[in-house]
Image (cartoon, rainbow over the protein chains, first blue to last red):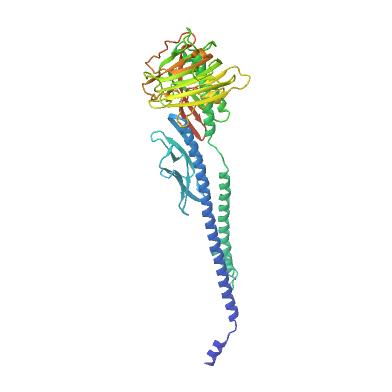
Length: 154
Length: 348
């Protein structure tokens, strides 16, 4: 019994172990926090950059749609208007889709991961046709039969 | 982390495996930094993309189109003046002119990496009525009030008269009552109904006054404008279809305050593209001395009433308009359209 009491009351070498465990726990906590905070920061920045890039791509596309509209208005049937534009296939590592929304007179650009959607308004006299294309090289063309502008892949 | 552990094992049974968490963390941070670099790179690329301008060349397509339209118009005017003995001669001359134009424009465009092609498609017949001897605008027999042309149809979406210009070396009328009057009226209308009239007189040595009257069945819209010509000019150049006097806009000839354009055909309520017609008449033609020229549309299989026209003024076969096919290609743009050219035609 006295041996057991001696062992239980013996606190030698505890501080070394405790110190090791504590420093391990604090280091883990700090590093985990750093990684989570860093990762979150990068994710936020990435989403923001994707949003910005989609906005810029949308605005460039809107300018091209309005240029195509100007060519259509200046032309007489039979009319062919095709404007090609090459954008990057991915925005900050995410693939994206471009579509025309005729009801809102807008261009909608969307990515899936992370889910970001951007709308850019366009002002045209020629109607927009309901159409979608994958990001990258796209073509804006005038459909003579339906009298509208549409976007498609090239 | 097998390699990290292996390093530890090689150190022996008491191998030092400390630092694992820091290594893992460093690895994770490295991945984070690489991702951050990618994000920053994308942001820089976005800035670059935002500052890019027009790349497809649609501005060139439109400016070249305008140039082609002007040049074809000049070709039509030249053919109407010089190759007017028959419709076929007119067409042959215009075709040759357009071929020449296509070749020259194409060569010019090729230097900047573009392909431009212009081909003749069709034409619509017309008659050019002109006086070039500088006498009073009366008929050869001295008649002051006469019908210049009758039975003019309106082309679809536009007028039936274009490039109507008077170069007056002298205008003697000084008030509305004795003014030289150009009257455009629906064929068969009575009184002043369905008419558009322009009265031209002088209110000063260098100032011309134009009063236009548009009658429909219920009311008359009267508008006035005055233009003082630049000093040193010996003629008043009155462009009745362009709405200018000596190059300055004259509101009475142009757009009405209500927004409706009252040029010619639109003032007579003749439907564009239909079978209705209008007549153009002069009154008090002895009040103006000088020259004039106009081209009117003759609907196929109809004839115009030119019974008062003899040698001065005179009438010749002419082209009212010409349609060409305009093609403009660049690596990023394909633009093909028909282009109807009718120089000096008002848009209604």
